[in-house]
Image 1 (tube, rainbow, N blue to C red):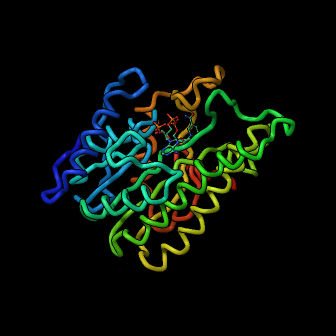
Image 2: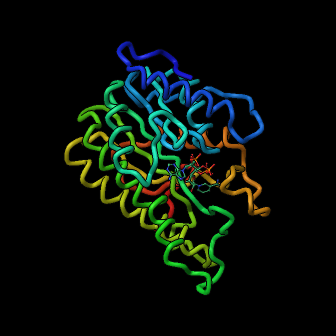
Image 3: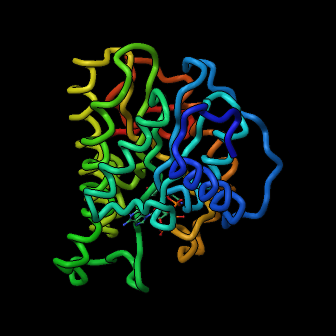
Length: 269
Ligand SMILES: NC(=O)c1ccc[n+]([C@@H]2O[C@H](COP(=O)([O-])OP(=O)(O)OC[C@H]3O[C@@H](n4cnc5c(N)ncnc54)[C@H](OP(=O)(O)O)[C@@H]3O)[C@@H](O)[C@H]2O)c1
């Protein structure tokens, strides 16, 4: 899973690497031929990490990052790793950030977590289905958790050289693009995520002018998240990962704070 090992990594880092390897190997998608991505805009070495490495897109991103061989260490965090990373537990987020910083210079972080449906509860079709607990849960997973993770990671980014934090958002979080309505909690929590990313990018630019913080829409991808929606004939996660890493490689400091799709085109707020 890792191109070259960081010389001084901890046992826990080893465990995470192993977990991420398993996550990637047990991805939900039909195995696809791998095409090595290039990430030459980043300084060689350092650490990359995928948060949500057990997910459909997250596992494909982990595999592609490892195959690239660009970073010394590629870590994958999820609720199944040791230590566990859970968006509802800030202590676990702080611990993951500390672990990542201990493994080397943080160059790339992809937050690939997210929730559209849970425990059989499909997204709301009407205001009649609005429920305080479900709304709060959507905000916790899709907005608050990633924001708290940024709180612990952004101060640890190197002050010079390209470093990127990309949070996977969704085009349906765009208010300007919302013509169909519905999916209240998911749409609103992704819109909140976008605002949190934009705020963080402004603050980050003051201490690390070459660093980048963005929200990305991966396209419709065949994963457990999109599975209940038969009309969503998505692309394979491996293809989505290639697209996303291509966009990340092309981003420069002038793009920080933005919301881009898998082609790199800006998505309206
Ligand atoms: N698939 C699409 O068509 C599509 C379209 C637009 C946007 N997106 C976005 O892309 C991202 C990845 O989606 P996906 O399709 O890969 O979904 P997925 O396969 O369902 O993966 C979701 C990931 O989020 C993690 N997660 C959920 N709750 C968590 C928690 N409390 N703490 C830590 N991790 C948690 C899951 O971990 P566990 O394995 O522990 O559950 C899993 O790794 C999401 O932000 C999603 O909104 C996807």
